[in-house]
Amino acid sequence: MPAHAGTGRGAGGQVLTVTPSSGVARAGASVTVSGTGYDVTKGIYVAYCVDNGAGAAPSPCGGGADTTGSTGASHWISSNPPSYGEGLAVPYGAGGSFRVTLTVGTRIGDVDCTVRRCVVATRADHTRPADRSQDVRVPITFAAAATPARTSAAPASTGTAGTATTGPAARTTAPPAATTAAAPVAAAPAGSAAPAATGADAVAARG
Image 1: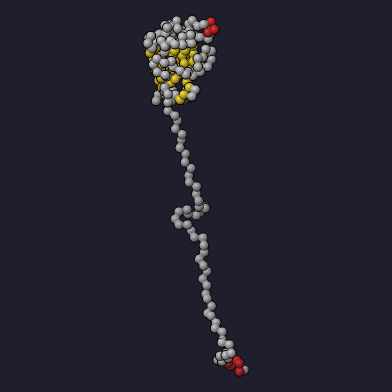
Image 2: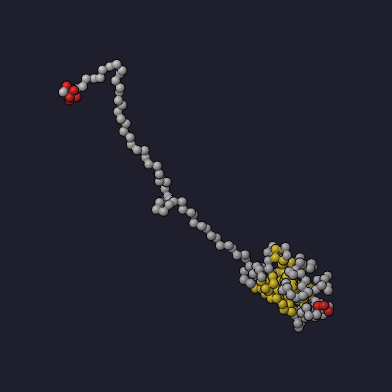
């Protein structure tokens, strides 16, 4: 989703613009917030908050109520702050205008802003906590999470070099050696004479 500006309008004619408001980076993103038509007699906070719906204060907000102006999570805009706010609150410009930069992300405390609706909002400052007349909201949506690249390892080879690994495994047992059985020799029965020699054996015996 490409990043682009979003605009919200308040009941008193206020216009709040946030750039970008969609396709925002999921961590460490900065957005530019500008407003016009605000009541300069009422101080406001400009902050990144959880939206609780119409008629309810947007809360909690990133960084809380930043009366120091040092966190980047919220800004205090007031043309008539209490004495302790002088030098901390930024006065309105012409026509009840202002321009600030906020840091936003996918979480506000324990709240997941990819599940709950989170907004850049204006609301009356701590001197008028119940005043909802300055509530204006612009929803923030984030870029899609990056999909991890898939990696797959090649299957390990189980064969040895030069040996095929497909087909039936080679036989490693040599066939049994051929054997020739000797003809059995029958012993002469006890008490009997050996057979008479014949042929050449007989001649040799007579000589």
